Length: 299
Figure 1 (cartoon, helix red, strand yellow):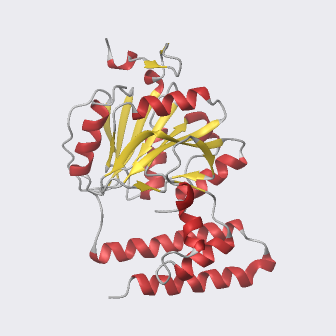
Figure 2 (cartoon, helix red, strand yellow):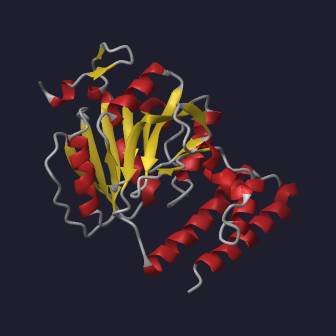
Figure 3 (cartoon, one colour):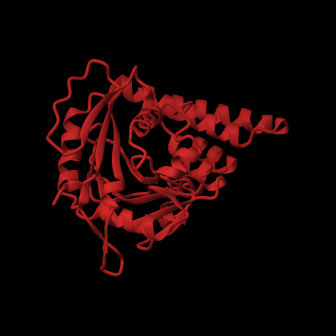
C-alpha cells in the first residue's frame, strides 16, 4: 500500500479514506537538526503517512541531514522569517489538494494515533478551523496548550505578577490551568502553535499567521482571527504529543526571546484594545511588560 493511500478509521470504526492523502506537515528549522530527527521518526511511526512533510529552513547556513520519510523536503527561507513567517512559507509551497496541515515545532514527538485522532476530530467537526492535541512536557505533565483569549485585565495582571506571585489569578487564567487537565474535547480561544492541525481553507481564508509577530503570540492571534471568521478552535486531549524541549535556549539568546515575548504580548493587546480612549491602559500595559522584562532578565 502506498503511504499516501493510508486510511484512517472513523470514530465508528469504519475506514475514512483520503484523509492521510490530504494531510501535510509543516515545521520550521533554526539549527534544529537533532530535534527534527525525533519529529520525523515519530511521524514515520504515527500510523498516518502525510502526503508531504515540509521543513522550512530559517537558518541560512544549515546543512540539514534528515532521516528518510516519503514526501519530505526542505524549503530554504530567504532569511529568518520567524515562526509564523516560516510556517506561512511552508504552507504556500503545498499543492492545492492538501486540506489539513499539521503545524508543529521541530522538537515535538507524536504518540501513536495522535495524527489520526486529530484528523478524525477535524473531519467530524466541519466548523473546526484548528484542532490541538494534549501537549506533554518532558516530565510528563500537561502543558496548558488550550487557553482563552487574553483580556487587557488578564494581560496586565499576568505581566505584573507572574514572577512575583506565582499563583496569582491572572496568570492562572492566562495559562488556563484550571482546565488544562480536562479529559474531554472542548472549544477554546486559541491553541498552542507548537502543535496544531489547521484546516487549510480556514488558514488560507485569514492569510495564515500574522508575520508581524516574529515569535510568540502568533498562535493567540491566529486563534482570535479564526474565531472572528466563524471557525472554531478545538482542544482534543485524546491526541497526545510531547514537546521535548530539545530545541530550548539559554543565555543571551533566551533573554532576547523573553524580550520578544513581551513585545509580542504588547503588540497583541494594543491591537485588540486600540481605541484612542484606551491609551492610559495601553501605557500601563507597556510599563508592566517593561518591568517584567527587567525582572525576568535580571542576572
